Image (cartoon, rainbow, N blue to C red; front, side, top):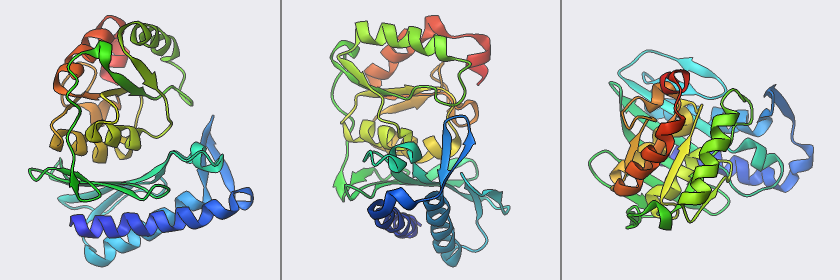
Length: 263
């Protein structure tokens, strides 16, 4: 199943790479305020779904652009191009993300960066890998020494003031933070030790599912804003090395509201 997911991700990535040669002629639509979709998103998604259905015609699909289809204990969760705004501006930080969920548990994960040809993979209980080399989260134990990833609200601005307050605390308490624009790739970077932690509000399952498994298989922790397992349903996620994860939760805790905690 992981090999099929890798095959699908590489096919989607090939479509994305070819499109980078002609960014000025790509059709782009605005789904919501500052939330864009390109014809490349749709073409890559169709290619990914075709590849998965060739191998597993009875599996269910949850994809960012085409939505949910099918009914099965197995469900593929697909983001064909995470970081579309980056992509259409030629900013090279975007990825294909594919996860397989079996009876509510994510069991396979692929995050593929087509521009760098970086392939992040994980199977539950078998570890996480970057280009066939075993990945581990960093060894950092202090938030003060950590580089933290995040994603700023761009479409839904209801929690903007909370974000700004959290960022103020993060500036004081960490070595720095980065907002690169692709949550799936940010989570993969935590798994690879390139970031020491990550938090974001208001994500969708396809943004998180693959990256979360990469992190846990690389020895990190992932949770919602209370450190529990509901991040796929709330859309709010915190991740990091074990000790940095705890310190991130402590930093976020004073800013939580009932609405934010519920997602």
